[in-house]
Length: 444
Ligand SMILES: [Zn+2]
Image (cartoon, rainbow, N blue to C red; front, top):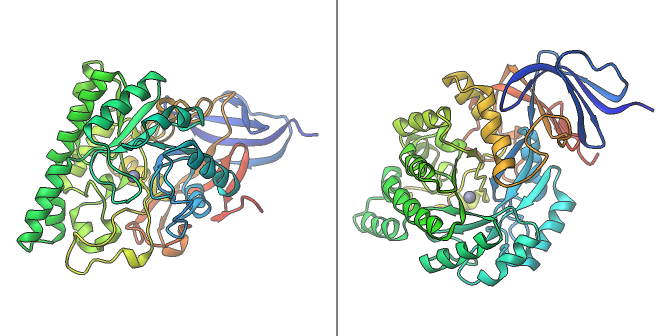
């Protein structure tokens, strides 16, 4: 009998701390040994020669909407998780809404957990929701294993997931703090967004730029400042999702300096696309908060480099093609960008190769920090004792993303036709190869 299940030989291993040549030995889903000094000579059932390749911890996508149960025709746990595997991600945290019934009580959580166990080819974790109606359900959701709670400060667009008013934020955060969990918020000002949108529409102004101007950066800043105040008051750990501008990140930086326990996420689309892409690709590139301009995009990369961004999650939020239609009015057409498969490609191409972001920083924001912030021990790192969640990438190989490369249920994405440097060769989840040779091999 072989000593190990798997040995990855001769690869360049990237962690949040350093990049080093090393062999990796895996048994029973765990990394047993990382050997930088000498080759691992023992036997294994399978040996992968990673010479010339880079070995990363599998990405942990802390922000996806896979919409199952209830709207699996929008994506689903199987296709969604396969797209992650193809993109080098080995874990995801599914948002409580867009799936229906939403994860706002224990029963609904258990239903999603069962489906995920059955269908996902990568590690699945669930967010719980905080809505005005479910303060008394939060503890049971926490005990049921949610990684944290998500609330909307502006309307979510989904009728069975109400946004949290200030009273809900206060009561919910007090409750969440009592058992030491965390609240993530979609932070935009309802009043600002609704008034500005009404004014634009009344004036017949419905272009891409008008839509973007109706959800300005100041609306994010107002909401972020307000929810940080509740975090300071209640002691609740806070996570701001999808910050679209470094100006928003700056507010969070200031709060961190005051000792507030707050972290911030941005998404690949704010780092790769602008309002011009929205004008061109229409609903395929529509999201909220919206895409900004080139200056904001570059400034956000500076925030990544400066260590001001804690996590980068895809906010993969797909919908069927017939909902993604905009003719002239950019206030119409369902928002949400399909991007889960492209996160690592964007971070490598736009970040590492074009802007000099160190590989270690990419690992930190896309794997190590999500594991740390959301308290998933033994993930997000390549080290002895950690789960064998690994992605092997050829940084020398480039490719153009084609529609047919996508594992999504609906094969649209603003990244189709983009050229990327760095190709995912193999994705390993708990020691099992789930993707190789451009194919999903899990469950075969
Ligand atoms: Zn989202």
